[in-house]
Length: 153
Image 1 (tube, rainbow, N blue to C red):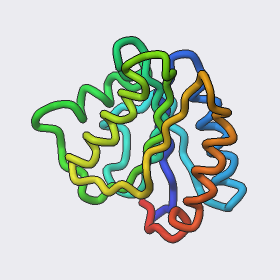
Image 2 (image 1 turned 90 degrees about the horizontal axis):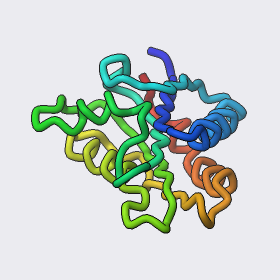
Image 3 (image 1 turned 120 degrees about the vertical axis):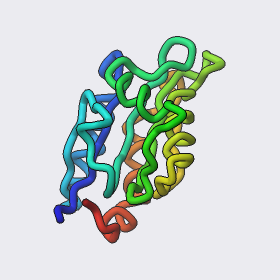
Image 4 (image 1 turned 180 degrees about the vertical axis):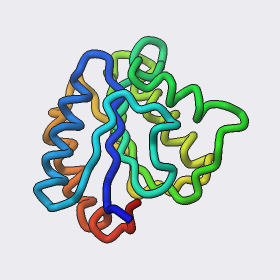
């Protein structure tokens, strides 16, 4: 068993990727092992352990292009259950849209429905008003002990 935190990135413009890279650096500075998935497909991911999901919303509440395959699977009526998975979501959006962080909210809800365990509360970042790095740094630093003690796959 390896103790790897899998970081899933859903981005359109690249801002979310940069934020995930920043959080990966923080995790690795705490000697936590990570694996980055810039265009995650559901079938390529382990179905147990820990996923940290960085997901930008674009359009009318849509998932970023790099996670459309992932969305197609978790949104199915017969999506596989994930009882051995723990996760946390960082949702990115712009508050000027009524679909602010909708993709991240949907992902969080769907994983919960699929019996995955939420490790800590979803972070929502408003690219219009927040300092994304500062907010994500605080969020992940508050969760380092929980991540360190969790039995990853």
